[in-house]
Length: 120
Image (cartoon, rainbow, N blue to C red):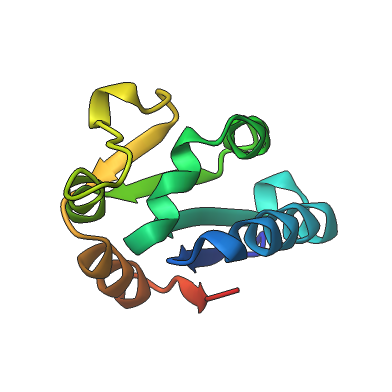
């Protein structure tokens, strides 16, 4: 009988944590192998602004091709569009980024499904 894949949820809610998170994900995949881990990345709060950063999007796209799932909090995207912030609409997001209604709900659900929680 084969080993069950590791299930890991990375929670990024601060812009300055993206590079660490992407590095952690890359290192995890290198260490355990592509088929041995299921990875979700939930972005909420100010960190959703990274979805408009071309260099970070390149790294995310490469990881998405390795079956990493990137999830953006709809509430956080809407909050970006208030005040003087740059507005990032759901339609403007790359196709590999999925939308969840509330990042916190996705975090709680994933943990109840056996995902280990990592907050870089």
